[in-house]
Length: 103
Image 1 (cartoon, rainbow, N blue to C red):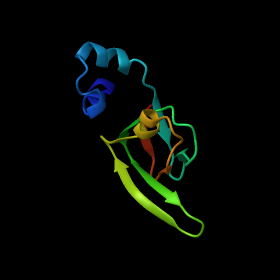
Image 2: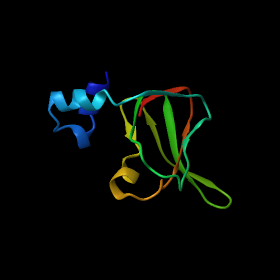
Image 3: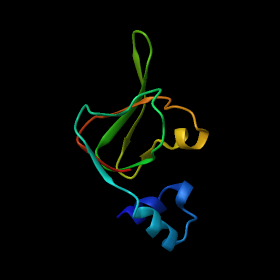
């Protein structure tokens, strides 16, 4: 399954099957329970996550309110911005339900 998930991400879509297979061997399955934080704004971004199932809310908090930027589900990915720009995480990522991800 990790190879198929990798191929669906534009960043990896041009990799050969062999390279995707090698990369997929580095992936680890991660489980988040409802309400569990995957990462917080300001955290160092060293991981790309691929959602197998569940829902992850991407949001930013200001002093008195919280704004939801996206709700991501199975087949989608997150965390790529911090990998590409080398900056800290720009938002919070929290599981809305039990979620399974490759990291």
